[in-house]
Amino acid sequence: MIYDAIIIGRGPAGLSCAIYTTRGNLKTLVIGKADSMLFKADKIENYYGFEHPISGKELFEIGEKQALRLGAEIVEDEVVSIEKTDNFKVICVNGEYEAKTVLLSTGAPVVRAPVKKLDRFEGNGVSYCTTCDGFFYRNKKVGVLGYTDYAVHEAMELMAFTNDITLYTNGMTLNISEKLKDSVSKLKINDTKIKELDGQEKIEWIVFEDGSRDSVQGLFVAYGSASSNSFAMKMGIETEGKSIKVNDKMETNIPGLYAAGDCTGVFKQIAVAVGQGALASRQMIEWVRKKR
Ligand SMILES: Cc1cc2nc3c(=O)[nH]c(=O)nc-3n(C[C@H](O)[C@H](O)[C@H](O)COP(=O)(O)OP(=O)(O)OC[C@H]3O[C@@H](n4cnc5c(N)ncnc54)[C@H](O)[C@@H]3O)c2cc1C
Image 1 (cartoon, rainbow, N blue to C red):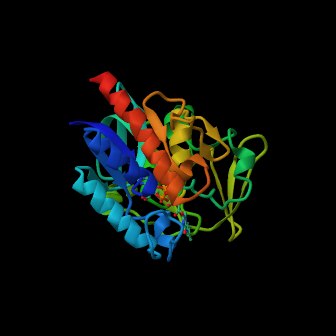
Image 2: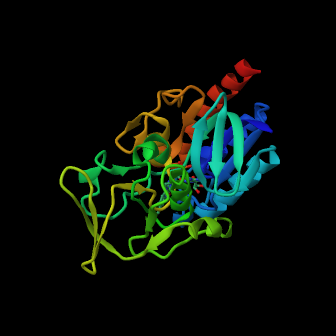
Image 3: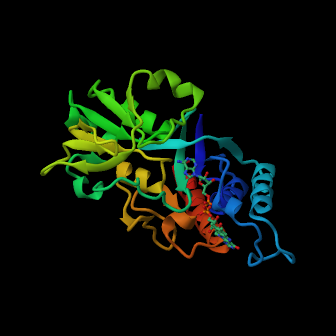
């Protein structure tokens, strides 16, 4: 089944967009983990329409109920990749979905992996995109830096090119869903805390805090959750710093793909996220009507 619209993110930007797209008669799927910056806000008193302060959690729940009542579907999942086909294929830990148009509303970009000299080797053996760079590492010894489903997904993508893959968790405990446990068994796991990366021109070594070191020819970073930056790097979405670049219609440089909320690097407030979600919805409705 092909959805008209898939919205990635269950925060104010995504749910606001879903409220408009469902009312605009688009078959809409919202995909998100059960979190949002809203959960960090104990008391909100600057959002229009609430005489008394409301907690972020309450606002999240009300927003979801409103979107559901209007006909949006919501699934709890983590998106690990988006592919541009005739439509958009959205790949999650637990399933795959297709839609004519997609909104990125994944919130503030994820912080960098805390590993020294990572930036020094970016483009020189350190990559953020298995789809773009996996091919260069055929039969080579590569690492994936990460400890979550996202990292395992990236490692599985690399399996098409090499079998010598180690998952470096940087001292973190593996946090993998049941569905991917079989996949993990195909990987080597190193859970030692990393001190730094080392090499001449290109990355050659991962140096650990216990004094040991591993040689690698490439290191793919998939640390924590996939965020708007990860999708940007895989799909060639233009960014400004870490934020997704949009115009005043919330269009990215990829036709049919829109972004709204904190991931666009705007004034990080609910009112702005909700407003951008609404603006994006208008373009998404137009886009789908033209495709019909
Ligand atoms: C402590 C604190 C207090 C705040 N107080 C206020 C306040 O008083 N007033 C105010 O206006 N604003 C406040 N804010 C800011 C406000 O919470 C944010 O601006 C707003 O939540 C942004 O909405 P968003 O939809 O862009 O992102 P978010 O609310 O962060 O939602 C992002 C969504 O994307 C999902 N997601 C991310 N990655 C993936 C993935 N790979 N796959 C699937 N889903 C994914 C997340 O699970 C989440 O559902 C506060 C923020 C903080 C941290």
